[in-house]
Length: 335
Ligand code: X2X
Image (cartoon, rainbow, N blue to C red):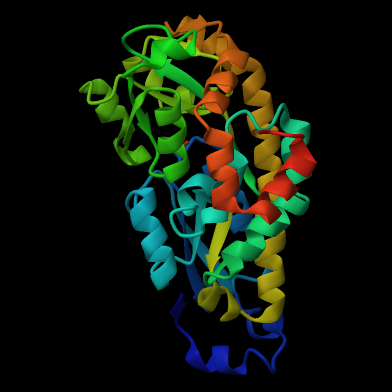
């Protein structure tokens, strides 16, 4: 956070926020940076900008947030470091990548845990989300209440269609930087390569990776269909973004501004979920028209392969009984 008006800040606790900010065209007292990895046209970026505009209006211009979408400030792992140091104040990040800092945060990505969106939101707006948020809080970061949707992930390939687990044998698949992703695709017999999203398109184009996995919405918005031929509807995990704040930056805002920032970001998260829901209904047809071939898969066979490889038992041990118990209470028995 840039402190332009130190005196106003010091007085902030005593003065009502809006009393000191009613003059138009005055520089913001609090300037924050919000970063993400999504293309500017992704609902995540669009809805974050809307939240920013509402926050500015609701604080009479006192809180100005600048959006840096599309990895403008670096890769996800770079931006996570910047968030921790306070160079970035707000950052939306996949829980699975956040797990490089907060191990519990990848738990929603356990293979085939969620059967549908109702189960996802009940868990993430409920006890499972609360558990992960409290783990995040222990690491000097604040997680807003509402997660943003990334989606159920599907496998794409430029070389051959993936129908059954055997098709993944030795398959060079790009996965985001996260132990859970690597472990899951190793358990399925593939050769996962950890690459940040900022490098995915070129990794696929140059065939460093044969394939990758992402929700259909992102395969469309990031134009991955240009460098991939097949998409297999595995829905092998659900992935979402936590809206994270640097604790020092946020607690530097007056209390009423903190409430406004959280309220508007959470509202935009719900809007974004609805956008992705709508996209899910139309995007398959669009991707087919762009030349992507949809592949039917033997989904239970993938889950069985994970079980047989001991994947669920291993991760239950890593997360511990408390976390695993909360997950299973939401989604049913896994191991
Ligand atoms: O890196 C990815 O594949 C992405 C964009 O889905 C995430 O943020 C995890």
